[in-house]
Amino acid sequence: MAKAYTNSVQGLFIAAMIYLAWLSHLVYWLAADLRSTPWPWIVLALLVQTWLYVGLFITAHDAMHQAVAPGRRRINLWVGRIAVLSYALFSFDKLLRRHGLHHSFPASNRDPDFHDGVHTSSLRWYLHFMSHYLTIPQLIGMALLFNLLQHIAGAALENLLILWAAPALLSTWQLFYFGTYLPHRLPPGGYQPPHRAVSSDYPVWLSLLTCYHFGYHSEHHQQPTVPWWGLPAWRAKKNKQQTA
Image (tube, rainbow, N blue to C red; front, side, top):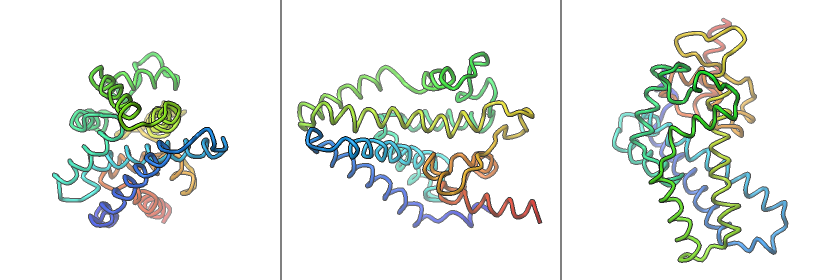
């Protein structure tokens, strides 16, 4: 069923467009004169860049499931590696291993994305979640890159803070909140095995804005090889079959 929603040419094209949009928007605003730019435009640019960061990570996530270029493992690996390195110098191989555990043991003590079993609030869960992925070498690398962009490339400090650092950080919260916390927090009726995940009931446009349809999380766990852009159609077809 997943093959009906997956196409290598389309997947690679969409991945490339997200990457180029993220990169070109970032380059433009790092070179912009923020002091002469009206603040509403700066706020809009920050929000857009945050959303593009989310798309960059969702692209890497699709690559983990071989959904960017089906049947082409090496291409998916390189798409994923480029995306997460650009995102925040993450190791794609490490993320891939941990994401495999998430799908094998969702919402359990063997799930690296789950809370610690005690602190289930969104903020405490987020901090626990991030502690699994951030490393000292990575943070040192990001600090070095920050200084290179400022002192070698000539980007202004305020541009780096507002349009590079802040969107990257905000996107981690957006990804966590809409893609992990809401889908995997304990539902009123308890978890339903085997996927132990629920989906948001947002319309397609809002689902796209919040997390590139990653809020359709039950559908993702049921068919993880469906790319993000195929989830609305897969969800609609599944719901139609259930009500038929």
